[in-house]
Length: 335
Ligand code: ADE
Ligand code: ZN
Image (cartoon, rainbow, N blue to C red; front, side, top):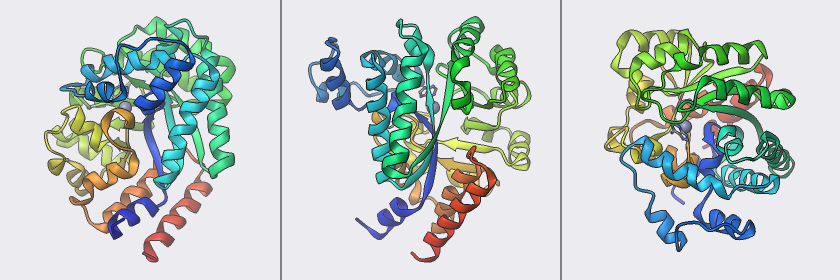
């Protein structure tokens, strides 16, 4: 391992943008298909991996929702979560705030609790095994309607004391944040944090809507905010955290070359950017791979800033954030 690799891996970090269904590796997909006696339309792990070639978000989403069909039991969700946490721990992640898409599972007939209980069990196991803390964020699928999102929030009611917040994901263009204004207001009334994917493929106006109508606490992706200087100023002044995902951006053609990734511009403009893996099983790398992908574009101090930002942007209490920042600074000072 090079010095830079060791530095990136050793930096204590939080991951704030991770779809747990997107951490389903082909090997585990085949294993769960066998365990649950399900046929999948691919002959081998290699054939499946070869299908992971996308030219836009929708290409990926089609295969991602299909892959999630092998998840059938609480044990499956537990195993999925623990497999992710094991990899995250190896990458120096000490805290993770993970997304799940309940509608992907309830629409297949699984009760809400199968995914929620399994994931919460995996999260407890990661805390016990690795000391890795985590929070769970329920994402609404934006290609579905408002009524389905409200039904999901209703179904989640018994679990809301163990869910940190709500998010918004899936096909962005044509499904603006305004479609979910009332659901996000209801989530806020429950005391839930709010995050939303915006400005990944959608225009800067969707980011403005997420701020003004959904009252988000954190912005997922946000790349296209850079097209609007006034929006950039607003995000920087508000100290809004952006959960940026370099390898996802490359795989989904949000950027055409990782060497031209806008992370240096984001930092230069004073945006609180963080580095995350999004759907690591599909995009070719976990969080440390994402830091490595942009390491040539930023300074060592900026890598430390990105790790610090991951805690500043987390939903952890202030005293815990302070403790993590001290650990980042101590690591940076001694390496
Ligand atoms: N669901 C999983 N990953 C996503 C992404 N990058 N954008 C939108 N929806 C998603
Ligand atoms: Zn995402």
